[in-house]
Length: 376
Image (cartoon, rainbow, N blue to C red):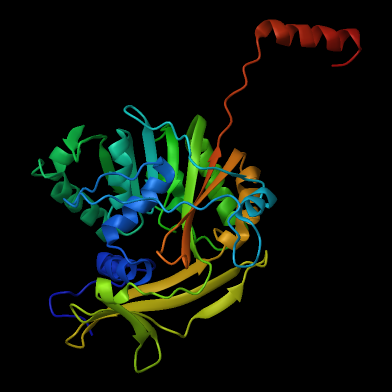
């Protein structure tokens, strides 16, 4: 069943029309924070400075940094895990964003990460698979900017908000498995970002490599790709559930659910999940979710088929794919996400090499040497 007046097409994948309701409940229940802080922490991880809230909340958000000698539950130190994956563990990233820079932000949902990236002054091209979420992104941008009355006003240029200069954010439909089709011909970017654990839906390894090669082609020399995700590393206490008005439990049918005690809305994950093994040994799972309201009506959120290629346990695998696509200088940054350390968030940044310039004189000298040696 669906609430009267809320008829909608169930999306092929993703949260669809229940996106924000689901994120709100999940953020409070699993991470002990409002959705806005959740987005700000993710963007703060890659910008090295948590942006001021766009929603009127001026509360300070403090990063929860992990030291390089932090020992993971399996007994491996964080620095060693990064090194084994061919990555350098860093305290900060230098994305070089600012006024005049261009960012392509992928799988943006309602666009919160895109708006926060724009607080750097960069212009952001935001792409989302679900058309409904693209529409909501445009509407929400108008709502949070405050000084714009229409979508056209939002898209007009640079505005001031939250004591920051905003770059423009342009929302459009796009699928990161076919990224080039969602941007203008010849467009190049200074950074390509895929945040919020969104780079997990491509299935076989070759699909990831092809997507990363597209990212590589769309970047300026010296441009960077940013892949951000989170990982459950140990059992958490969820001690904040009472404070944030949420609880964890099961439905009478045995499905896992998170409940917003204030409204009675349940975010339910069905337990009849199917798990398969891909050709490279990585696990892929397929499951479905729905929202159940206090009056007993439900809203289907569609089926999700996700894999573990961008998983904290598969850092080396993702690193190898980035290198195969041509990227260099792989860096890793990790922070606590939940207050009890049960969840971490991490980001991988890799660079497209600067173009090597060979002078004409040096080229001619090389040709002369080859002739003297009898080489073509």
